[in-house]
Image (cartoon, rainbow, N blue to C red):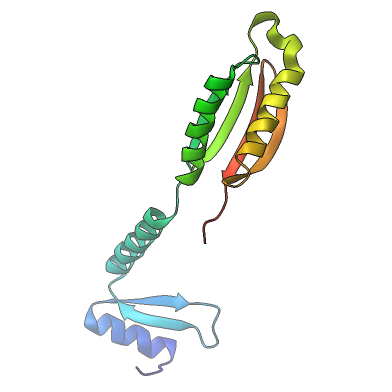
Length: 146
């Protein structure tokens, strides 16, 4: 690989019927390469697509409770939540208040905090229970496995 001044490099590229592509413009002197520019763009897109495919996609699973959820239903939903967190998905647990059940806000919060405590070894709370309209929501993220 030889180092040429820009004019000579440009003339070499024209002789070969290729393009002079600037690889690193911030370097001193700037780095350029004689190549087919269309092929360079194609390869670059291909690399970006491969990187995007490797990036992890965040999956959010939801679990819905009522303010007066029974113990058996709670245990069943807790097992599902445990499975979701083990699989690496984020968990959105919420209590939905229908009609006048909004008076049981404290029961809903206690239920979500109990769930967070029971799932402590599988995930950590990202957002504490927060009331938004008719639903109280809490987010949990899976713990990193070693």
